[in-house]
Image (cartoon, rainbow, N blue to C red; front, side, top):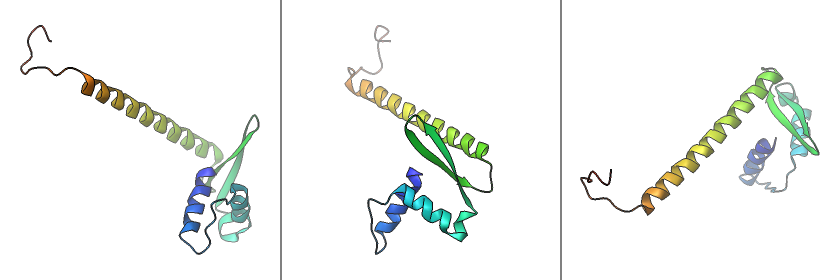
Length: 109
């Protein structure tokens, strides 16, 4: 829901009605009232402690499919973050290492 709200506020900035503080709850209510969207977009409430959030998904799929795809996307994001961090660490170590003559000696290898 947060991502959807961010996309909506970005589109508002391009219109004559910019609003940086547009709340996700208002957007959810607006979607649910709109007859062209209310039957196509569903919301599934998630609760974790005091945190409340929603999964937003198409009515063409069931909630378990939406959750599974959300988990897969989250896992992919974590792998990209880990890969990026590893790439940065390797590049930094390479740049800070002593330069080797070419071809290297047996001792250097």
